[in-house]
Length: 158
Image 1 (cartoon, helix red, strand yellow):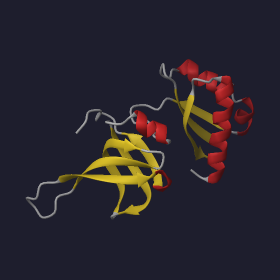
Image 2 (image 1 turned 45 degrees about the vertical axis):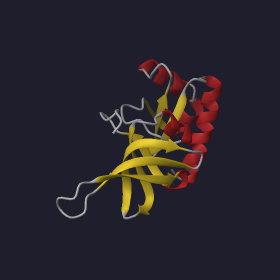
Image 3 (image 1 turned 45 degrees about the horizontal axis):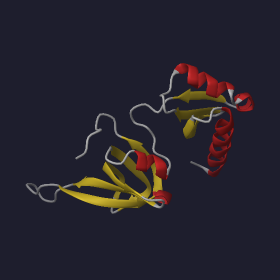
Image 4 (image 1 turned 30 degrees about the vertical axis):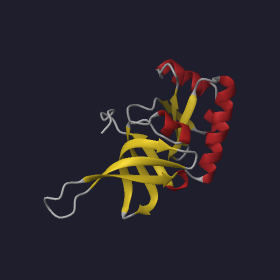
């Protein structure tokens, strides 16, 4: 996210906390000029009626942007330390802003999440043919994460 999108997300979170306190804004992404995609979540799930309530709770924002409000779906975004902690034991993909050890994408089981970093158990590629891949652990500071999300269809532990 850019600094202006961060500010916008913070503003929307503040508004929703007052109007719809059980709604969590997971992501605020510009998808085209004058169009914003808001990804929301709710303890009871997200349906069309909730998306409509969120849209109606942001009237001045609707004057400036066309809003797309949607559920997180099976590949739920992970944007805050609490999100990573809530889904420990699940499979996730974490993409970094810059390469780490030659990689920018790490997919594996979430095994730890502090206030500063997330830890992922990833399957490392084997070396020469015939070498068995090994599980390794990588810790990634949140400041280095470009994007994180659950991986659909891989809810179990390794």
